[in-house]
Image (cartoon, rainbow, N blue to C red; front, side, top):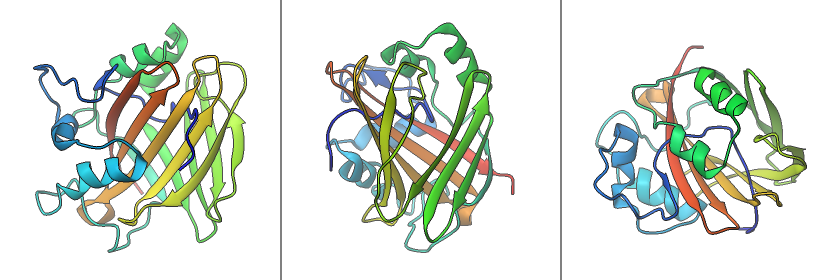
Length: 213
């Protein structure tokens, strides 16, 4: 995979620290409990360690090899999702963006044979990105609303889950990987995000959504 800077503010939430492995006695949310078996870092290996280890333990995670559709309207399940404050701190977000992240409740996805599209809108945030499944890169404005663009692409990992990888330069340059995992027969969506900044800071978090349509 490419290395560099990728910034999906697409979903910022909980369990952020300078080290991914510093769990330090925190009370873990349901999403964070999936991460306590984390041993490796990187988009594919991270997803495999977290979600692969949970197979057969409940409705949150199911293999994408039994393919369901991502397409639809998804409502955030705040109770099951990670808190977004620590990730906002790592990304040094301003007040307006922090408030915007709090009020994001709906995500729209469109998954076709040729492309994967995400739409999020709340407050100052207006994210509408479409990535070809051919692997071609696309450039969009940074989701943290800093100057410049991020370069992104989508691919499918070995478990069959769709991923979006983004890279961006300074200020606060870095890399981000979002992994989309369907469960409950396609009615639950967990989005695992790994962020690695060029300054050495890292964070991971999970947002959980319920299907509306």
